[in-house]
Image (cartoon, rainbow, N blue to C red; front, top):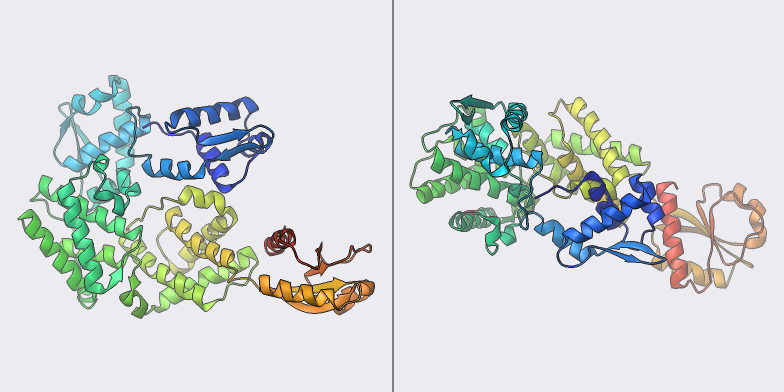
Length: 496
């Protein structure tokens, strides 16, 4: 599957963020390319999509994304791959084969023959793959025209999970009925049954993407156990870690699941497998009775407060809601476990989050760096930053963070129509605090008496300049008035 260029990705993400039509001039400014390049990018994207144009164009209006087709194409992107590979994709596919068969060597010719590349390209790929594998403390060994990946089992599995892209995009609901995913269907059904048992035993639900993370771990465990049944982990569990694990409600669940896997494989597994499955469970967000009764450690509380205070300062808003704290703390708790156990949860929405909530994401990234330093934590990657961004984006979207906007209602007399307008506005926009109803002739005293007012809704045009933002509306407060007021509120909150 050929990768889309950065410009193509940027174009699609920008259009996905804007639901209406976008002019070619706007696209030129966003992409920083020529008009000809914009046309070429759109034609290329539309030609590659078999079910009709992905980007709709209309003379005089511009371009618009067919959002349903876009979502479908994102989901099926991996499944409908073409036999065209970029150098990076070629190297990933070769590493997949080597990792899954490790430590068994594979002939170099068999690895590269499908890609029609020469010896110099193959040699260059080896150097790049070797550097990539060093991140996992793995070694790419060349011996007698063969290649093999050597290293600890725990590092091999982490590399498999990161490098094999299908583990990042699978949909649990799609696994049973989509043969194109090329999974062992017996293994799929067995693992899905184990996931169901975990949820039933704990009376919880494991939401996406944590259910996918556990599925991936178990699928890799089955695959590796068949290929290297005698291979054991070199790691050892400390006495303290063992005692902490055995006191946790998740331990007996992990133990039962590993025992079930042993029966399924008809082969014993090292005790280390219980510990690693336990790590994945304790690093997952759970919904249900277990999640609701869980308590927060002092570290979780402090880290959660640090994020809320940091984002309040960064965004210039007051984020102190108890509901936000509990929601975020329930995410921070397993996140700290993921950081400790070096478990990565791939964020499939990361690129869209960066575009849609750019300001919030950049703020979270800065706060994460402060949190990391203040609490002596491992690096917090952008996948985690993207997840955290969604909690603050939710607070912004739902208005939970918003201080009330102090608002004045104004008309010619200060009574009658203004009172009607006040009633309508209060009902439709609870985020507005109506501090008073005033007459338009009293504009001179506004600055003195209402110095903290942030908005004036007036039924008459104000000839004199006032130091407070105002919006001219109808006393009937029409739908058009409501849309314009919503825009004004967003301007005030975001400081436009």
